[in-house]
Amino acid sequence: MINIKYHKVPQSRVSDVDFNNLPFGKEFTDHMFIAEYDGEKWGNFKIQPYGPLLLSPSLSCMHYGQAIFEGMKVYRTHKDEVLAFRPLENHQRMNASAVRMCMPELSEEVFMEGLQALVNLDKEWVPHIENTSLYLRPFMIATDDFLGVSASKTYMFIIYGCTVGPYYTKPIKVKVETDYIRACKGGVGEAKTAGNYAAAMYATRIAISEGFNAVLWTDALEHKYVEELGTSNIFAVSGNKIITPETKDTILKGITRMSIITLARTMGYEVEERPLTVDEIFDKYASGALDELFATGTAATVTSICQLNHLNREILLPVKEDGVAVTLKNRLENIKRGKAEDVFEWTFKIFPTNIEKVMSSEGV
Image 1 (cartoon, rainbow, N blue to C red):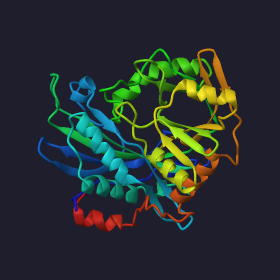
Image 2 (image 1 turned 90 degrees about the vertical axis):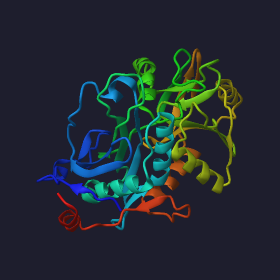
Image 3 (image 1 turned 180 degrees about the horizontal axis):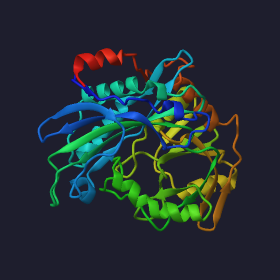
């Protein structure tokens, strides 16, 4: 067990939050968990009020891009229990990103105990309302105060929370990107590193100005094969078959993606993880064999795609309330919120802790 020092806010801001009108990514909780890596080990564990960090202008991460993160959600059940969804997979994926970016791995103990301590302290921020949740952002940055192109020796790991509503409130319109690339073979596309998202912003800005919500990335060499969709994974439904691109070094291994594949197979669907071309999607649409397109991700959960544009071609799909995407989303949400039996053991219960007692015994 790690020894966490607590510095609690004098007064919580949770009473100021309108939980019936939650934007995504703006309502941050009272506290954050911090750990520091000194070049040999992780230590100096603390929970302090959420707020600005005192950082040097020459901080390594600001110049050389050693920054990785995760996104995960915590839900409140009808029994008033608090459940985190697949946090161990987030821990494993973060360590995979750390290895690729030459950063130190985190032990399961540090990741999970920091997460639990933070959620326990800020548990009133976990909303009771449908379609809302507590979004957690664990991230790691390089902290050497040094200008030189080499891996940092020191790092900081932080977890903070944000009470959120839906990322998308309706089906989305998507543009197939054929000019810009998100990732290439041998690159860092499968790592959840900050630079991947910065590289995606320009093409996304153009697409939004054209009336779309997101871009569908294609392979860097030919712009032929489908890869990621914005910050999500894409699925195509054709009869009893669901097709999604196989994950590789250019596609992030989505945790929601893995969950949807498992659920779909248990429901009797044939799921193919394989190369998927843009032409195959449009050919299926032209022949009447394309039933649905949808995207999956932690923020987006499961979101239907109502329009897909590629150069001068267009796909328009009605959203089916009894369709595959909606059915899978509802089944997944019921597991996350404790409404359905978790036969896969995906949820992790955050057990209540007497924070005041912990603070008095472990420090200030």
